[in-house]
Image (tube, rainbow, N blue to C red):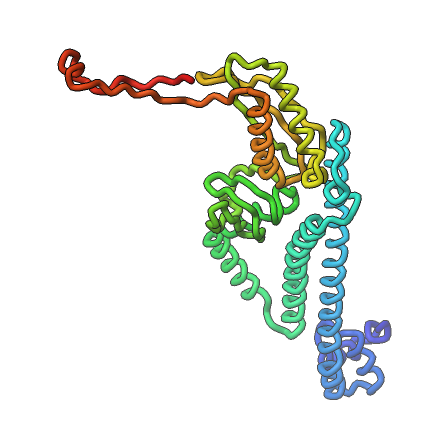
Amino acid sequence: MLAFAATPGLLETLEEGCGDDPSFICEQVYDLTDGNEDLTQVVDWVLHQPLTILFILAVAWISSRLARRYVLRAFEKFVDSDSSAATRRLRQIGIDLPETISGDEPDPRRQARAASIANVIGSTLTVLIWTVATILIIGELGFNLGPFIAGAGIAGVALGFGAQGLVKDCIAGLFMLVEDQYGIGDFVDLGEAIGEVEEVTLRVTRLRGLNGTVWHVPNGEVRRVGNTSQLWSVALVDVDVAYDSDLDETRELMLSTTQEVCRSEAWRADVLEDPIVLGVEALGADGITMRMIVKTTPGSQWALQRRLREALKSSFDNAGIEIPFPQRTVWVRGESEANTGDGSETIGDHAGT
């Protein structure tokens, strides 16, 4: 190359054979063939462009594979650290979760979450890498990229305006996955749609309600999320007793009955902490409302609530503690009584025992 640069005549001849920006292969062939322009152009066309294109394809393929692999590893560590931090916070306040929930053992939900996020980010990076590779290959083939890039820019702007809702849904779905707002199997409240999560994609969340209705909720339309199945749940039971009941006796009976149920073989694995009787929750028109709570594994709170109500009803009946309920008494007057009165046949309702 120095020899060509030092000799203007040879440099002009090289430019005629290899162009204004000669490649290394073209220069070497031109030198070996003693300036044979035709052979130099043929060899340059056969070797230079195909090798460059193959090199671009190889770099793009390797980059996409590495991007997917390292993105998956990065998000697996992120999900594990996020779960460990949440577990530490719960243990600081005295809640010791089972190993499958706390992160001490592999959790399929966390693995699926990491895989979903990695697939989304990895696919996006792959598209970007292959888009750049395609542009480089087109430029290598000698096409003018100016009109192509300008047209792609105009199309991108038009597509962006037309697909604002889709982009909004995808971005919201990505943040939902990263923040772990809910996952498959969780029972969530998304506003008008309430049910169990069956599928979470980048664009839409699919729920199944208690009555079997399937809800398809665009992620961009979700304004707030109420998750009743994350890490731990609470079984909350309210029981009404009569005003003449002994509250201390009622509280002790509620606690002993609940402890018996929670320590049974059927519920031992689902109860995370000892039950707590909070006491009087309300003074109602018909009775006094007593409240108690039990921390449980996610999703088991509803079944435990039903079982506790059954057990408390039996215990109260055996102990003679009355569970008040409204009653209606109706007086029906005879014809003679109705004529002497104001003509009414029924006197109003009242609550009592």
